[in-house]
Length: 209
Image: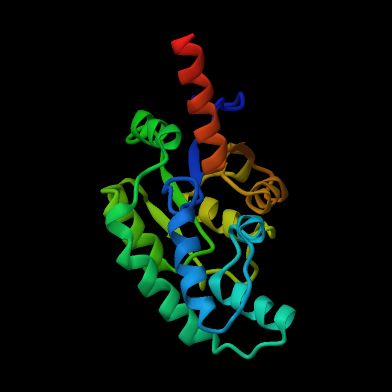
């Protein structure tokens, strides 16, 4: 499966991390389910993907409000990240995105723009041996307003010294696509894990027909 990029003379690529560069969303969900089970807190998988790109502290605060809970935000964040780190040896890159990173590395400046913490993003990229590909990382805590607000992407463009309209964003969530659009940037949507798996199955079936 290939990602079809929009037309344009782009001067920089901006990448979300989880679910875009790193096929980490299933590992994050396992960590969430484990830590939230201690509080009998439901977090449906569909909602988890819908909230992709939302900072961890916002997710915990919102779940507290929804379920009338008082989970300690910093403690839950720490436990969730520890559980995610424990599964990092299983992490793989999203091949359709890795292809574009390898093809344009050295030609264009790259940035990561993520709702995850800097520690989490660095750990994922280090596990994939990709950390040195990126000129800057814009992570939770760097900006005041998270996706779908354009601030994180605009911050990355400013750091790279590239005009927003000359940036191409790679994103796997609607929240991220909306943020890119609000920033005046073109974007390409990275299919979710089940969409990529379905496409691979269809391709294999056609190939065996």
